[in-house]
Structures are given as C-alpha cells and as structure tokens.
Length: 525
Image 1 (cartoon, rainbow, N blue to C red):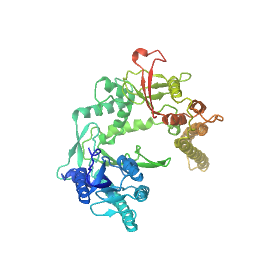
Image 2: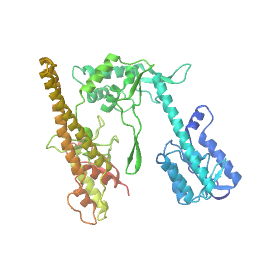
Image 3: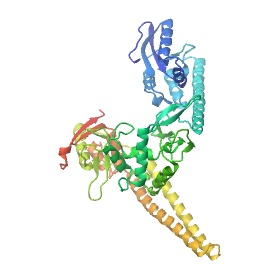
Image 4: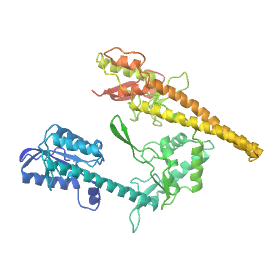
C-alpha cells in the first residue's frame, strides 16, 4: 500500500518510516482511524512545509520487539548505512527502535556515520550536533523503558484475567467460540454443540478404545478422517491435533497461564525466539462450561503419564540429512524420515494421512540430490561447513544428564544401605523393608538402563562433533565434503547452504518401483 509512494516535490533526498505502536492498536480499536495513514499525511505535510523531496516510504506492517523482526526497518537501515538519504522523517523518535541496547546502538551508529538527519514534527536531530546526538540516544533509552513498563502492565493484566477465569486467547479452542462478558471487560467461552460432541468422542475413544480396540492418537485421527469430520484447520486430522485436544485443560473447565512462554536464545550471534510447551503451567478455574468432567480429564491425564517412558530420545541428534528440505508434491507438507527395522533402509514419506504420494528410500533420494548438485557445482570450490551449534549444545546437555543420572544412582545406593540399617535396628518391619527395597531396586534398574542409553548417545554425539573422516584435499569440492561427513546434522547444514527447497513427486502407479520418482531442486543461487 505504501511501498511505491513517492513525493517528488522539494529538494534533497529523504525517506519516511511508518510503524504502529501498541497504543495505536488500542486507539484504532476505539475508532480513531488507521494509524499509518494518519502519520503519512502528517509527515507529507511536514515535508511540503520544509520543501523536502521524499523518495521512498517504508511502512512496517508487522509488530516486532527487535529490528530482526521488522523487515522494513532492516531495509531502511541498509539504505541509511549506504548514505542514500539526507534525512528520514518519522512521527516520533520512539518509532525507530524500542529494542535492547544493541538495537538502539545499531540505529544510532547508522544515522551518525552516514550523517543522516532524523526529522520529527517536534524536533530535527542532526547526528553531527553533539547535543542532538545526546537527545537522540536519551529518546531511544526512554522509549525502551516505556516499552518494558507497558509489557509488564500487559503481562500482569493477562495473569489477573486468567485468575478471574477469563479467556485471554485470540483464537478459541476447538469446541468453543469466544463470547464477550456482559457488564465487564474480558471474554469467556461458549460451547459449540457439534464440535463439543467430537471432543467428547475423542476423550471417550482414548479412554475406552474404538470398537473394543485400544486407540492412540494416530488411530483416533484416522477414524475422524474416515467419518469425514473436519479438523480445526479444515484439513485432515493428525495425531498431533488429537494429542493437543487431549492435553488441553480448557475442556475440563480450566484456564491455563504460561503454557507457551517465550524463550530467547543466542544462536551463532543471532537472537532467536521459541515458544515450547510448558508442562508446569498454572491452571485457574474458568468461567466457561467444561465439555468433559473432572473424572474423565484425570483419567486421560493418568493414561498419558503412564505412557511416558524414561527415554534419552530428547538428547538424540537428528538422523535425517534432508530434514526440512523436501516437500510433498501432492499436499506440500515437509517429508519426514521413517526408521525401519534392520536391515531395511530408512524411508522418506509424507506425514499427511491419506496422501497419495508414495514413499522412497531415503538413501536413494539423497543420492539423486547429490547427483543434481554435483552437476550444478562441479568443479566449483566450497568452504568447509561449520559444525552446527546444536551438536555442541547436545553434547553438553548429554554430559549434564549423564552426571545427573550417576548422582541419582549414588543416592539410591545410599538409600538401600540405610534401609538395611533400619531393618537391623528394628525401625523397619520385614514387610516394610521388603516393600521399600523393591521400590528402590526398580528405580535403580530404570536409572541403570537410562545411564547405558545416555552413554551410547554421548559417544555418538562426540563422534558427530568431529564431522570429517580424515583430511580433505584443498580446494574442497561438494562431493569431497559431503562424502567425508559423518554427521547427518552437518550434512543437513551443508545442503541448506545450497538448497532452498525440493519438490518430491511419486504417484501411486509408481508403487513398487524404487527409482520412479521426480525431484525439483530449487537452489539458492
């Protein structure tokens, strides 16, 4: 809407930057008009008054805390650093950066070293003027403080609403619709009868089975698709979708808070954000009517807990060198690796239930991709790939888990010795001693098995942290590097430096023919 706007009248070379703040969103909800349009009109009038030539308008249509999350701000800074403009017009100095000190420093340096002015209706900031520079840095500092204060207030308000039993999410869970509370602020949930019956059926099947046969997430999803019941997204049901419903305490009448907390992490110098599931979230009694009873919820929760086995799977390194690269040509979903019992090779398959795409040998698909890349690159030299940070992090995690497991085994051995001492002292009866000893031995056996698995995983991770087998000739070629790699994670890292994505197609009539599939490889160059 704003990208191709320019105002050729005036002199010099200037740009306009537009961005909404949280206050603007609240004002728009009250009917005060579209913010970016009002700011554009205000800044164009300012440009006309100052006789400035506007070459480009940068309008941020997404909300982001940091510059990394704001693509138009990144584009503006690149142009400013290239000394493309004499100045930038913005409604307020706070619109440029409300991120952390690194973001504020980048903005300040970009304008300072390019000698680019910042023009607002209230003041013009000249980076070559020492006092203007101090005003500018102070303005960014105060905007950051204001942002943090607003965020604390919003988080406190959200938690207070959850304590009052109000629903604070923007999208209602399957089986409900949002309804406005009368005579007070906030929202609650009202039941959609048809969808609520499906939710009750899912809980019933998980507890009592389907037609007398025990059912897990996959079987329930398959049964729902056979019945032609639409999923919340309108697509086919998946095991993850069924699992999410069975784990959602909203259906038992609760409101959850802190279920997906934002976790910040520095990876290769870049700040990344994730929202992992939190199993220790806080539950509050909700105002909405539950779809299932408390007894059913507890029974399902107990069954899920009983199926959680002590496993070191969370510490295992990825085994698929093509992870995230191949898309199904029929439905568009990312293809997945399926491990098969020895000696059958792993296969590459589409995870969509009922998809007509036929699976193939992962090794054969990998070979075809290597042939295609070799034809494109040969004899182009390549730099050796770095070890992904996830491998070193995985090794450190495994070492911590191994140390913790050894410590728990040591504690159990001490407990077992104390039990014998208490029996000899007459504190424990024979029956109590045998009961406590049996419990301790079971825990010890479980921990010993876990220690063995963790040791194997650590040995594998340490091998992967040394990705090459022997020395490589210089200059390296793609085939030299790839064939010398031992870690699937490093192979995946190398492929992602060259490939954007791959379309895999294998129709049903090609079933039984291992090599009758097609690959469309889209390179990054």
